[in-house]
Length: 213
Image (cartoon, rainbow, N blue to C red; front, side, top):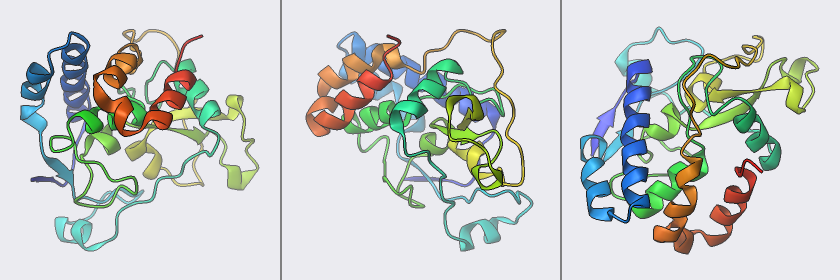
């Protein structure tokens, strides 16, 4: 295992590019090639801490518990937000890959892409923090913000965790960015390749939610 303490925007794009190549290889039926393509990032685990206060020493980061993810409970609504925002984080502009698709890749390659549903430190690959999107309130729910499509925006799990409720999330940015579908076009292939046997209902439901139709 390789412990990862921090990542930046370049790492986000690097992870996205690696996983795009992996998904493409799986869709072509080349699981061995896909596994080889994962080699540069295989076995990494997140041991850092994400918070609104980013000016901390490495010792402080390792000493404190992992951050909690604030998640909207309506999965269908979350999927609508991701699709509307083009699977892009509206804070950093980086590409996002739905957690269910990352989980599908984990189901196919568990050793290379470790996953823990509670995002426990040392148990989850950093791609789940760097790429997985969350639907976050533009005006915080605690400040009266509505829990509807107009008041929700797409943020990476890491960007979401570092935003306090006192802040207003960035307004979604549309257009002007390279087309990106969050690897949803490969989701069915990942399910057929074996992920669907591990969590059949989970992947079936999320595949429907993420369908553009």
